[in-house]
Length: 264
Ligand SMILES: [Zn+2]
Image 1: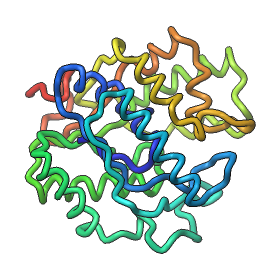
Image 2: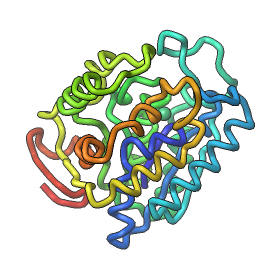
Image 3: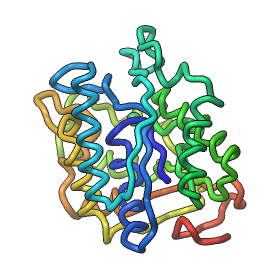
Image 4: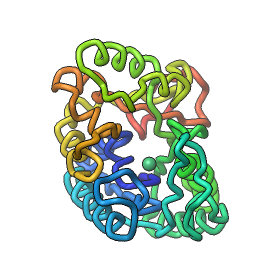
């Protein structure tokens, strides 16, 4: 089971691993906390955007071979203009949710599916979106409640990401709003990562999954992460997105595993 904050997060972080596991015959379940109705998009925030983004999520999930998709139904907490917690947010914002309450919902699905593995985010929530930090908290607790044995924190190896962005910045002109330096403190340094999953065989599905999130991947002001990523040409894309990274906290740091179910 893969637990994400918003539709499109699965495309960026875990799509290759999901496609790989599905191809290997595993039942892959995708759960999102929110419909992402406060994300940046042409049509503006609101229920209509949420509905559209859930449809995009179903398309993406189908491309990746998911057997089931669930949305926990929390409100997208959004972001303040500076990137922190937004002051104005919906009553049911995911970040305001009681951890045990939300974890109970997720644990119920984990139990129902008899899930062997739960993928969540690192404690920093990747690039720090408050909903992503909450995914970490709620996911950890849910795994405890359901007794899920393997918990993997999906992350990005910061080292090659910074290198690739530096290179891409020389060749392509990023929009002024896209500042590669914001990635300097995001995600996880390489020496803390326990799983490096080679998903080069599945980069086609991963790219298709990203492209399925039309509201996030297109538009005039394409300063959105997805839009920037989709501009990366094939060979570099495989280099950047051909590996997915996870941290498993109950194996010694420095362990180097290559498959989600590989034992240390
Ligand atoms: Zn997100």
